[in-house]
Amino acid sequence: MLASCASPPPRSPEPTAPGGQAAAVAPAPVDDDQPLPPARQQGNSRWTPVHWRELPGFPEDSFFEAWNAWIKSCEHPGPVFAPLCGEVRRLSIASTDEQRQWLISRLQPYRVETLDGNPEGLLTSYYEPVIPASRLPAPGFGVPLYRPPAGLGQRRPWFSRQDIDTLPEAQAALRGREIAWIADPVEAMVLHIQGSGRLQVTEPDGQQRTVRLAFAGTNEQPYKSIGRWLLDQGLTRDATWPGIRQWIAQNPQRLNELLWSNPRYVFFREEPLSSSDASQGPRGAQGVELTPGRSVAVDRQNIPYGTPLWLVSSGPSAQLQKLVLAQDTGTAIVGAVRVDYFAGWGSDAGELAGRLKQPLRLWALWPR
Image (cartoon, rainbow, N blue to C red; front, side):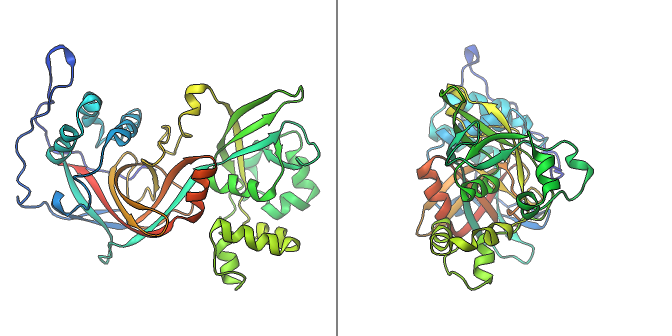
């Protein structure tokens, strides 16, 4: 499913240092006025080459977190970026200025546009919810989260969200597949949309522990945005999560109608969460742990996994000019200039993710 990519041109030998240590990188000087390569077409996007000076904020970013995210991408690199991973790892202890000079010498920035030349797109955000849960159904904990049912692939699409809530046949297929129960069906919907989360589970003996729920499959029904449903019905002008929750509080009798407007249902698998795992995000579609503020989900037809990107977005929720890595994807992330920004986990990340929806400009950094 990874977009096909041409192999990079031959490169000069990787820089080395005595004892295997990263030395100060001294690439050949790069003339930022040198002729640019031709434009590229990547999936349904056009990549227009630009000079480095055209990237807003590039001289100011500190690359420490982004570099760590890039090292994670090197655990599962695509064919274009795999040859650079040795240098990327050695430069992990280099200064920001050395890393910046390496980027300039090794990579060519391309402005990502639609095929008709529009460089403006949309930035949204997602996060990893942290939700109290009970291992067994209990007062106040009546909303189950499920493992995939046996024979899920034998019926395509599987039962819809409404079917799962109402049909005895669907409920029988899921009996015994419960991982845990949570309190709020809206939180369950959030978890389904985000695709992963953390549960603070109370076990039958009263002990509490935190586990991670990872994406394990869907019912293969189409994803429909509940925010879009509210807008289309003329029921709200604010389709952010705070706006959606406000509408639900005012219209509790219509909660199921709202939730059932999205027929897609997500199933999970439980993973232990060690202290080291707890400091990392879930694994994205590239197969590596996501880094808050430096990992993004993209439309994989237009941007291959592992591609470093220069992201610029200005709006009421965030001012961003930074290096990020394409390490994930999502059902709703479709388009040439379309990014979902991983905000992290917990309430603060959820607040940002619930509100972030603003213009985006994007540059792909591709090997020379």
